[in-house]
Length: 183
Image 1: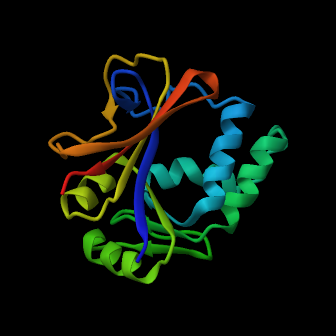
Image 2: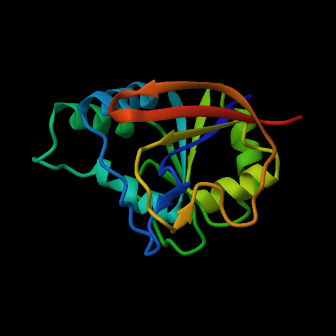
């Protein structure tokens, strides 16, 4: 059975995007990006909501301005199987699975069928999966930035009870805190 993890960069005040839905957090510099490259190698399945899919699909496109660390991430990301949960997307690229209905039922099946790490991206998707008891670990990558409002890491109305698994300081003054749901 897979371990489902929801992790995102987050501001000190708890937001993953600004009030307009734009990602305004600093782009990870090379040392921090290497951490995310290593994390991507650990992921056996990437799961996205529509908005995060549209942001992350950048890594599937060539970009001559990417440095070597970015290219490494793109290669790892392309090798990772992907599922997109969306009722509004009409299609996704070949090799990516689109699930238009019942994310909770589909995720239960994916969790049972996947032996390794399943990484979830997207606050709304994570809230629905967390409310169904399907998130095993929350990974908050807190950056020393204040956005003052926007899209919260924990979607409005989702208030899980958590216990600390660990914390570590990463490059760029980013602090990774890991939590699990309380039994």
